[in-house]
Length: 331
Image 1 (cartoon, rainbow, N blue to C red):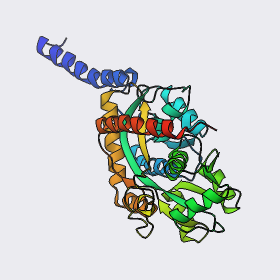
Image 2: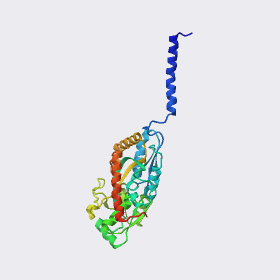
Image 3: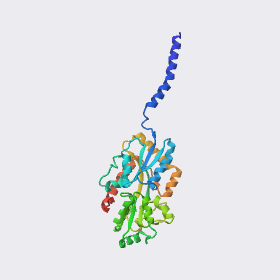
Image 4: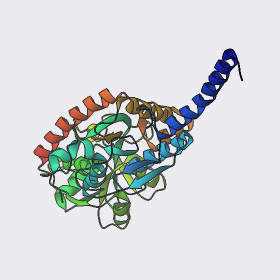
């Protein structure tokens, strides 16, 4: 029969052996910590078809986030000026695993353009990080007899002209409406489900121009397939400094910039939000990513979630005035 001291040692050893097993059982059944991310596959929704700037940014994140240990998929959900894809994310679980690359359309313009919105862009999302901005590039079919903004305005006053867009409410659409207002012309807007659908019609001459995102349009200009007229930003783009701005070409005050930001559904826990934000900043700071985006005319500028929320509010006010002054409507 063991002595009392030996009995106590045996009981202590049994207790110590039981601790790891209990810890394993507890960790297997307990939910992940509130700041744990990712704990399952990540889905990044893009509200337009493949090929444009939002898709490019989503795939950059997906590529860099692959190292986090969970599958990352890019899901293109185009339609209704981006509202379909954005609404899908707004109604998703707020755990940080379903995100959207929001645009100036989905998170600023559409609220003023559409009479009924399926979501509230200021209340139904968690702002995570600004991603990048880019000017739009006014490009025309090679057969259009205009090489400058002034020549294009003169041509629009003499004959009907049309401009395509990647959908009603996009910055590509509103750039054209702002041009109409400031130039005193009435070019017809022709909306498409995405810029990938608009470009073939532009190359074929069925529409005369488009105010396309620079990452999409610049390669076509460099290849000689389209003719560049001007950029829509206040300053010339470092990616194409030889192309003048619309403002300096005869329409002072013209400025329209496309921007893209990362959002999740409202209610994402703060710890998860900060983790996603940190991983986003890390991805955009990678040298290969910076080089790729610069070559496309995309200027990354990841700020804080709070700065994104304030910027989105200011953009909402700005574009509401443009929509009202231009009388733009969804087509």
